[in-house]
Image (tube, rainbow, N blue to C red; front, top):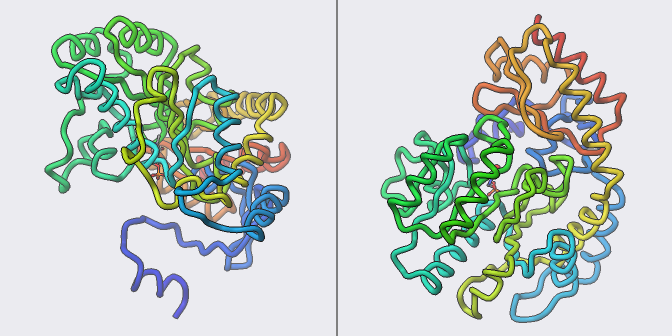
Length: 387
Ligand SMILES: Cc1ncc(COP(=O)(O)O)c(C=O)c1O
């Protein structure tokens, strides 16, 4: 049987896959089982931030793999401790809980917020406000946190205690806070799955003010926009916010599963032994790779991200076949006149890998994509859009 046939027969049908089997890659080029090369504008959905098969990351990972791959969290391991120190030094937050995915990082943030509120404000302050069109994961609690009804159907009853505010509607948010006992506000600086839309400076200021005035925690979901993709280390930094909790995953691992929940001053002592845990959280191999990834997200790389972003925004502004460009850094949404999925499939036939978000094409290229490949991809995409 071919891989397509095996997959269709034996793997649960949870993904609307494109008709391509990937067999390898080098940087921003991906090799298909069909013998063709593709330019990668998806990075495995914002994971491979230095592309496929990145040699220095692979070296960091294999060096740790040849020492040991796993130990339980009942013992210490140096890569996890060092990665936590680096994350704290780069953000000013104080401690890190490690897990294996974005959803788990967010589960941890939800637990921290609820326990902090129970201890500091009273058990009834359990509500967490999230934003409409947000996406926070696929576990039951993170699905419930996700402010999109479509994700809630078929899975009732979902864990309660989430209220949804509209991005841009500070008055509505304030009303929710006044009328309900709340613990926290949870936001993505740029909504990814919800349509690649930044929340904007005014609304970010409102989040900060409302949280401060009402003694709420601010929780930043940096799973997709984080780790350099925005053109700063984390997306919230563009808005001058100081979240109490930052969650991240995806690009931090550079290709291996990792989740991290960064805890600030107000919450770093909320958990005691036994309150939370994960068998694989802080896995030394994943952490060794992440140390390497984080050390490469420096000012020079961030500047390149901003320059490439400006190039893409400029290239698609007023481009025939597109209605708008949105996003931040190298997380860019293009609203095509054709149905987004149809255009993504056409782009695939023309050698480009990209994904969609709602009615948009979503561009998430590796942060170090060479300019020549990016230019070639942009020309191909423009051609496909009017074909
Ligand atoms: C903003 C955001 N949060 C959480 C998640 C869930 O991450 P994971 O799929 O690693 O559980 C995603 C995944 O796309 C995301 O974009």
